[in-house]
View 1 (cartoon, rainbow, N blue to C red):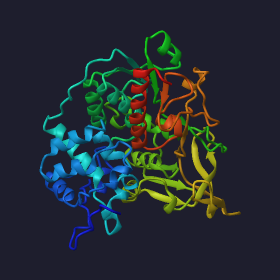
View 2: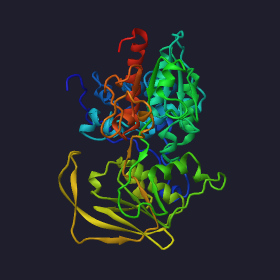
View 3: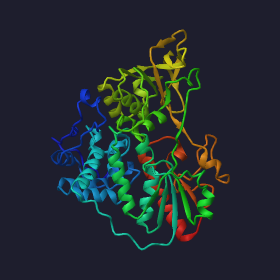
View 4: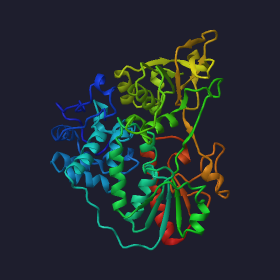
Length: 474
């Protein structure tokens, strides 16, 4: 491409590896697996950046981070300035640096990727965000005068936090309403401590509150207030719905109502938000089987199976109906699970969960699969192999096959359109719904997806809400 620098001869095409906890140790604790770069490592990795004149990496970042600019600051040892450069467009750098699929977003476009490993943009983002906090240098930028306009944000996940931060920086008054007792949404209830520590999420929430955003927990929109109440009774000028997609899916096979069958949502929420991982310090017991099967192949499945190991399972299986190549989970998460001893039962699909006379799981009847022609997802469709049924010896099953839209907000907002799958219909560029003054983004408009896509929606919505508040145009 024009304007790109050609990789120099002798250029380092190998990225700086990030230290991780030893697998034998980490399966005994919930501490973070990836340990982060040292300053020396970060500078060495940052120096691999070619500083392209036309940086295509930015095109892959929904949060619009000025990637070469923050990386150049790292090479100069200006770590705090680098973090602040990211925060010009992304209020959640420590989160995004840990859980965003950079390998499919910014890093896949890196020029170095043509010849070797792309610059480790996500690891560098994590490093500078953590450094800024560690040295106590987090500062709130100067806020503009208040506009007098009020916005209600429903949900404190990545979309809600982003839209709230951006609107606060535009001078609007913002109140976030969170249904659970802790802010962070899926970042706190869905992602385990060993992948995204709760303290990191809280740090980002604290920063957003310092921008003047008010966070109100234990308020269920659709029960405590409806969207119409927020607009008509509570005096808000606009509403953003970032309620996620928290309705668990099951396979609709016999035995799913047995004791010992969990949705990944329940299993992870009990462990994360209700702190079962700190039992007996926190009284949230969770019965974990000796042999656990997690059905699914995405990041949530990896989170659930690795959590089960840490809670004492002797065997933890991933049961997935396609092959490893089709797994939607990040490669890094699959590798971590393999290193920790997770058993992968690939090209296998459950057909029935078997129970004992007391109603507890005692096994799972499965069928072997083979891959046929590609389906609408572009992946080859799994086809059952006749006569290949067998029984897995398991005493706990976690269903991690996806989630859908919780109907609570849409069902109490009758003049707002939803699609046939229950997701809110919203313009992909402005996040406007069919109801005047109401915007929506994140998983509730597209189904379960990534943190960074939700952040991107928050940014688009903030611009559109600001325009609407200033002009009244819909």
